[in-house]
Length: 308
Image 1 (spheres, rainbow, N blue to C red):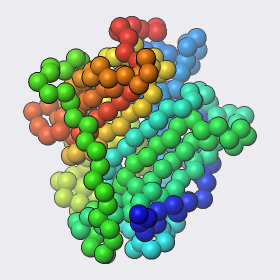
Image 2 (cartoon, helix red, strand yellow; image 1 turned 30 degrees about the horizontal axis):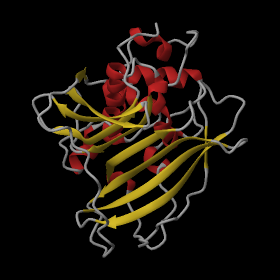
Image 3 (cartoon, helix red, strand yellow; image 1 turned 60 degrees about the vertical axis):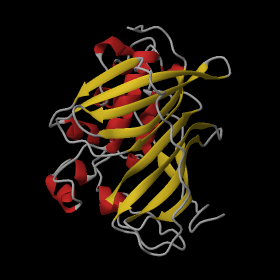
Image 4 (tube, one colour; image 1 turned 90 degrees about the vertical axis):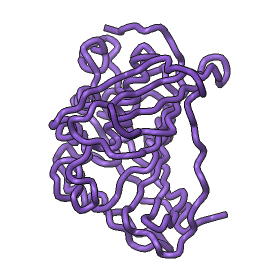
């Protein structure tokens, strides 16, 4: 059954990146000197960390700081009330890696082709589900497919459909994690991560977060999402970007600068074909709430190794 706005296509958005953008991203999500292939442009295996594509819609082709609210103001979705981007947080994100990204887009043309999958009235807010394809214009090849939802806080009650329930991917019962990855944030973590192109003031200054009931600035949801993917790849995939096929998680609660993130990771033994194993994970603030739930990935699990 179709919903308001379903199938609406946004104008395609040109995107570009340089080697320095790739290096900054890897630094900002916690890659270490043991993973020099993500951090040093002259390494023989220099690679883009695979989730880098998720940031491209935020920055387009710009190398300059952007006005987040103006830049993120999208075309109105037919049949849906105008939504305020000053009060939006991430709901859930999934990305499928179809083709490795080049370390720079120089000499090639890439664009994001985005469309609405559904818009749902949750009473306390509105959920907008979208699909973003990263496409090389010259060849038409799709490099990544990202689907996700944004929750527009306090912008519900307009009479739209509530939407379907989403599947839950829970950790195996009565099984200890096969790996645990920890990351200590600090007061500057969000200020570094925002330089990738997500300049939402919510993550830099306390006023927006206070108005939204968070008490102050919070970390980017995609910071936790990207750092968790890095943890999985480092712990189970030998830090090899070709060893992950899909990654997804639901944003359960905010993270504050200075929090320590703890990711518990489970192997399920379930395989797609011979190589891709289903992985489950949960990321929490140490001593506090779960911040990423519904964690699921498809990976080739290898012994820990470094490409240094």
